Image 1: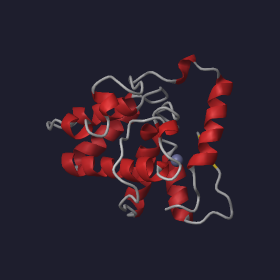
Image 2: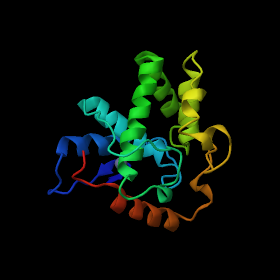
Image 3: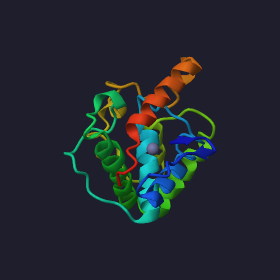
Image 4: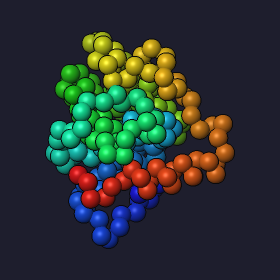
Length: 188
Ligand SMILES: [Zn+2]
């Protein structure tokens, strides 16, 4: 379980190296650049899990069928939420890195963190910043998985929308639900 500047990992947790890498990744993806974690889980969980698996060399195929990556946490099944957002989402970012080239990709990730440091960003913003860092047009790659980002329908995904209008108590309640459901400690 993560918070800005602090993480908790149960002593009984398996996959310790993975969990440490994943929770540390959250210090950047939602710790430094915030997002609506319920409506846009891609922006924090996919980015974080991508970084963790990239560092550890743990990339693997998803055990669920190909899914959209732009939905709220409420629209994924419990059985496939982790496989869709964390695994497929992270793989999508890694495929984007391979498509752009690592130098351009990491420059884009650093730019995203610098531009939106201590602000609320989101999935569309992350994808747009990566697209800004390559002469390639990434939108055709995005469209099948992120139609809400590319056609304006579906989940609200404007880059700076999010939690500003919510009460802090609502955020904590969402966060607690999110953490208890979404961090299956034994998974890897
Ligand atoms: Zn996480």
